[in-house]
Amino acid sequence: MTAPKNVALEPAAGALPTGRWITTKRQRPMSLAVMLPLLRPSVPGGADNGEDFWALVAKAKLATEIGFDMIWFPDHFMLANPDLTLSEGGIWECWTTLAGLAAALPGVPMGPMVACAGFHNPGSIAKMAETIDSISQGNFVLGVGCGWYKPEYEMFGLPFDHRVDRFEEALHIISSLTRTGTARLEGQYYQARNAVNLPRGPRWQEGGPPILLGAKGPRMLRLTARYADAWNSDWVARPEDILPMVAELDTACADVGRDPETLVRTSSSRFSFDAADQNPMVVHGTPEEMAAVLHRYANLGMRQHLVTIDPRTPENFERFADVIGVFDQG
Image (cartoon, rainbow, N blue to C red; front, top):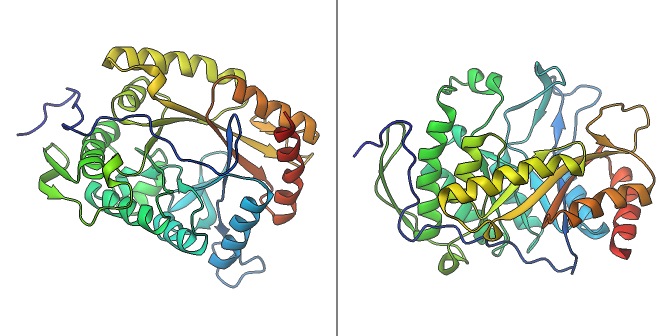
């Protein structure tokens, strides 16, 4: 049966979200995570040839040693410049990178922030998520979204039209496969014909890895309320910017009949030690001032805050250890 266009699907039987989240080793009012983009230049062998995978492993290991609870990695073919033109910087492929990181750093929580559903068949996404959940020993969070950067789609001839329609069908299949092990859908864009997801990962009895959506628009927020265990705000400039987004998320929960307390809320922002960086989205200051910003997010009910440290060098990661130290002091 083909799903009528613009009529919301409902999660499959047994595939309802429960608001599960990861367990971290440190006892904090809000866990701390870090984004690990890895850039390479457009010309191999150039003066700045970027970092290889093992340099990324070292950076991720350093992040856990200085106090971060979780590692996130973006899913892109290329990155955008500030003016949204195509960047010359490249990035390692998300899913294979996460699989390697999970094997190299046993038990470290990690996930994609967020995996682009438009880059893969939903059955493939569910299989990859189940596999990495096994490699990570049950410490994987499936962050997923509909994508946004059109040049990436055009580069490989991927359809960019009706992205949310396509995403809703993909999410229906992904959530059913990871939570129940089976899926059925005769959609307009995707089909799952008595599909199965085997073998199952370590959390199959709990419903597989938690699903997180990064969402802002009204329809994506409703999909978050309907399907997700957790929500991420995407990048915001100030803690106060979260408030209207949380209000809209609560409304979306009410619209679909969900208790908003069962949805984990997480936030993201950029921190920089570069005094010349005048980006209004970036947090500057002393360790005490930066830690105070993190506490403001915690006081707004965020379960986790995702940090991007600019520039993303090992030296700046070590400098951020002072921020984490002050944060943990309360």
